[in-house]
Length: 238
Ligand code: CA
Image 1 (cartoon, rainbow, N blue to C red):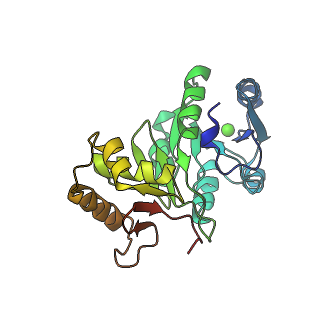
Image 2 (cartoon, rainbow, N blue to C red):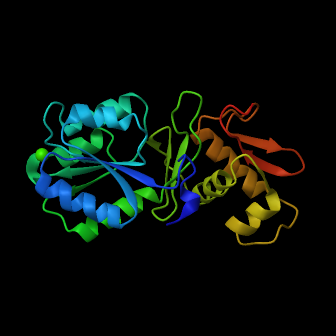
């Protein structure tokens, strides 16, 4: 397991909440997840799944057809509370249109039943690779990065970033709370030695700040550290 990705857990185990009422699915799936080294909490109805979500799992596997509160509503409520925890939908029929609606409800991905275990586990791993920043004062995660898929989310909304803006955000978030020098940004992102002018870099920082809704004169997220570089601020550090 990749430890750098578990910045928020209080312990080492990656915890998966599996909300599925069909034991013929949940039991083998739970066993497979345990074998993969995840801690698994299985819930067979939506109300109990919402309750279990309060324990801050790292990922939710969510069947849509759940008793009490259906999966779609579970997902909506999680998002309405501002929780950006990855949600992978399990849906019985592709034609339920649930796939699309599920994503509208704020789910991150879906698989249709019957699914191959290997494929599902690969999707789970892909979602877990997204590196989150610390949550803000309101408990909402600021930025989540999927380095492999080259996608980034700000407060749960996907950011429309250019390639360089993505790289910039990825490096700054990786070094969250620390100053990253202009030289090292130029080297890592542009693969070039610093030749004195970093106008290009400044331009991309401006673009990125704009997309984060950050004010260049008093930025909340990306600070300029004069004579040194930039720092992605930890929430509540100012
Ligand atoms: Ca079901």
